[in-house]
Picture 1 (cartoon, rainbow, N blue to C red):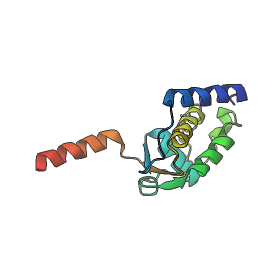
Picture 2 (picture 1 turned 135 degrees about the horizontal axis):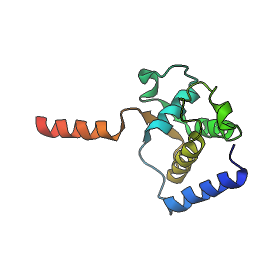
Picture 3 (picture 1 turned 60 degrees about the horizontal axis):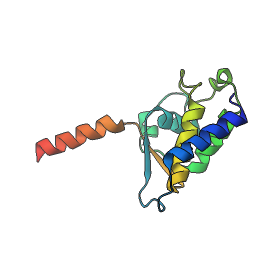
Picture 4 (picture 1 turned 180 degrees about the vertical axis):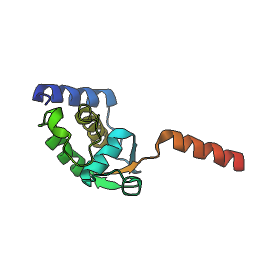
Length: 133
């Protein structure tokens, strides 16, 4: 597992990269990508990925923090047995969750919504809406 010094260094780097805190978020934080969908699957302890349970899933930031706290203490090889953790993500999930948690903290949100459709899906929907107009 990563050392406490390594985790603290990454936390500080994420905070410094994000810069000054904005005023509290007035819209929901919607996360896309493998780290977010994996976190949602782990929070729900899904043994098999289920789009219907992931897309639109809302969870408290504290759930993600608890998941991170559990994972950061385990070596990558022991993380593989956790329901919802996709094979191949065991070595990167801690860093990904740490950055997502830092982002949620930075924005001052207490709830995170997950989309498994991603940015490209949004671009396609926008393009099709323009074509239909």
